[in-house]
Image (cartoon, rainbow, N blue to C red; front, side):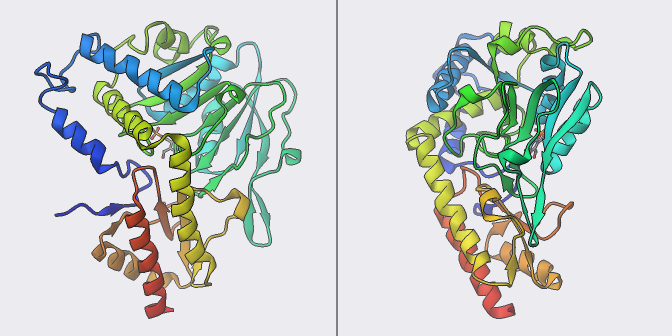
Length: 361
Ligand SMILES: Cc1ncc(COP(=O)(O)O)c(C=O)c1O
């Protein structure tokens, strides 16, 4: 079977060029006669890759020197516990913006360790949902940090700004939009993102953490959940997810070779606009997110007549457009357009949507 256009929300599409490079290096990595899967995490070849990987990501998003970059296992979900365990210190409360599935899950996990101040949530106006403005966010009393999810993958809701956070550290789950637009790392205490959307396959989670937030975890914090243990060992306190880390380094090289984050952001905007334009040009397709809060990575939409859902999905599949079914929590469809997607894939999707409407509208 030839390759299809994969609109999965994750694990998701990866660029052909990167997969081909991984294929070419599979049996003989950098002339050392072993596979990246077989290389020891303290070997010369792996250490060289890990150093280059960190240098490249620091360069791509200009990470200041007073931040550590960690390559961890346990997925983004482990960060839901690691963040409170490492950042609460002597505080009893943390503030959470609860704007969808993933921030709700993160605040639910943190509630095991502290009181949660809900700093804000989704607002419904005229049948559309939107994120809170800064004057609709409250930080509560003496919260240790403000946590939010920059892009809610399931609901297709993304912040178009850094939310107000006073003088407390800001923590951001960027799992589904990391590297899709320029960012100012210095505004954050912690940024984390699992690789399987924009920069690799499942197994490694990138954590960028400001140095002053490392080193004073809650007393019961397991070693593997302590940022300091990972920072001191170069993310090698146990055997790290070596192949996922290696693959992430290939993705960072690829993003750099394409021209960097500005170029990625341009692709994202151009591609996603084409899909929203089709949705907005008709009442055959519906998206219930306010313009300013719309995700530039995940577009959920419903058909006016849900009885056509199965036909839409099966015809899409025949056209090589795969994994367009919406998350079971919200139903309908969802097109996830991560960095590995191509203009061609989006054009074929958009033409399919127009044609499907013409035949069934
Ligand atoms: C925004 C966001 N946060 C967290 C997660 C959970 O990631 P993981 O499965 O790596 O724990 C996901 C997964 O889709 C996500 O989209």
